[in-house]
Length: 139
Image (cartoon, rainbow, N blue to C red; front, side, top):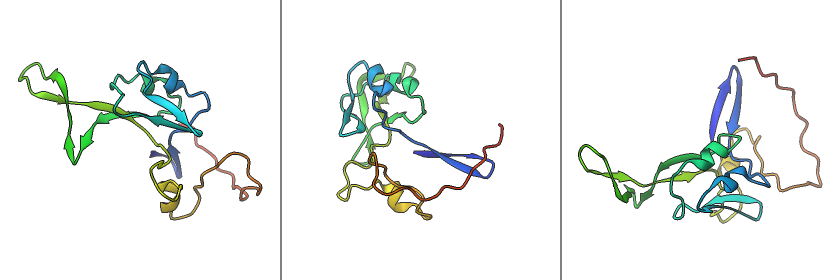
C-alpha cells in the first residue's frame, strides 16, 4: 500500500480484494487466487509478466525483485545482454491483509496513529462512525 496526496487530503492506494478480481483473470499462470475473501499472489508461481498490474483497476499491484534471506534471487537463464550478468527474478506483490499474522489484523490498521483504518468483514452489526465530508480538489 502507498499513499497519494491531493492538496490536504491523503488517500491510500491499496488492494480492494475484488470479489471477481480482474488481476486473477489476467494472470496466465494462475498465480493469483482468492481465499476467504482475500486475493493472494503465489510468489513462487508468478512469472513477473505484469499482466495483473495492467488489469488492476486500482493500481495496487507492483512487480519487484524477489528476496530470500536478504539477498536478491536471480532468474535462471535470464542475463543482461551486454555483460551476461544474471538478472533478478521478479514477482508481483500487493496487500494480502497481513494473512500471515496471528491476530488477524493488518499491520496498517494496528499502526494507524489516528485509528481511522479498520478491516471491514462484510455487513456489520454496528454502524460505522459518522464521517466528515472531504472535498477533493480538481487536479
